[in-house]
Length: 91
Image 1 (cartoon, rainbow, N blue to C red):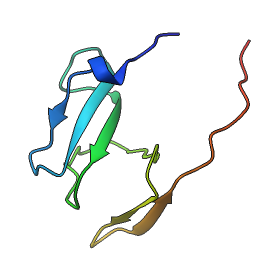
Image 2 (cartoon, one colour):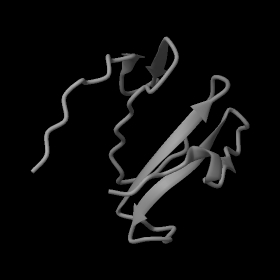
Image 3 (cartoon, rainbow, N blue to C red):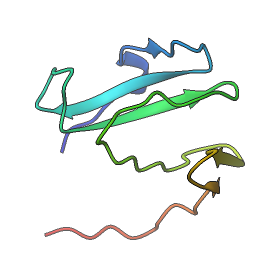
């Protein structure tokens, strides 16, 4: 298991100035054309997500009340905070 300290992660500002990304890891490592990526983002204002053609996104709200996702041609969805699981399963 590896510990990631958000205070030590590099911050990439979004082009639309509506947020920032802290990249945890990618595969392959340190490649711009990754197969998958895990990151933590902070969203400061309404704005559009960047396009990553062919990528499926999984979004989990870590803090805050709720976040509304809206697309003109796809869907509308409200993300809400989930309670933190109190179980830990491992072998």
